[in-house]
Image 1 (cartoon, protein in one colour):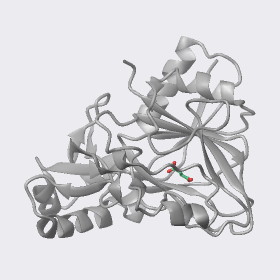
Image 2 (cartoon, rainbow, N blue to C red):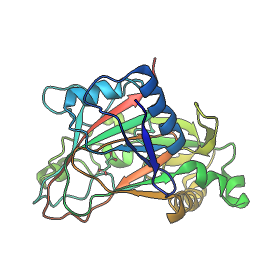
Image 3 (tube, rainbow, N blue to C red):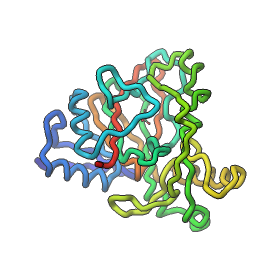
Image 4 (spheres, rainbow, N blue to C red):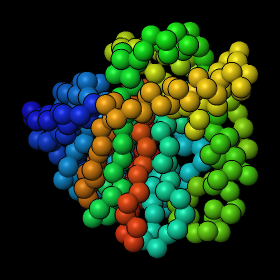
Length: 282
Ligand code: SIN
């Protein structure tokens, strides 16, 4: 089977057709998809009427299941979470800040898959920012501030028990099964600039302020302006691909190459996607 790969024409992203993800894939097809994923960083597969079994099988071609610390799984599954917002829900949009999934872990997921289950007729796009391009085009003055620096990552600003997803959020009617816990206070270090483990291409790793909460060897007062400058740079429009969803569309992205964030604009409509994170094969 030969895939048709259509680049988005934006900073990253490509659409893949000519493959049926509801049936097992040959090693050659998996390799073609992996190569396209490494080249384009975000792949979308339209018109895939996938079941949760299909979603799990597809994800396992690319690594092992990730550990999702602050989500409850959907019923009957250990590794699938629902990104969900009901039509009448008033809570803030989930994941509206730029981030790389679970970057506060020692081995964060290399990839995330999202499958469109219930897609609103308007809004709800996901934005992706290419962190290789952002690094390559970075002004030398900013590069000099970041080279060799280690970012301190933590889930504290999102998932601490007294954080934005605490009891008050539940009481306000959050339909997603988000489970804050004291695990959010843990920290993990990763270089701010690093080479992609598979392609060797240099890039920025992680999103300032949502999960990167500081820089090793700097006080908060010293790191804050640097992180502000970094976030303003890494999310510039010229590095961004805007992804519009369709029902039964699967998207897989590379958390080592892109940041992503959700958007709103679908008030009055329900939105649900099923999500699996993928860690590097053991
Ligand atoms: C996510 O960050 O996993 C959710 C993205 C989205 O809802 O568009």
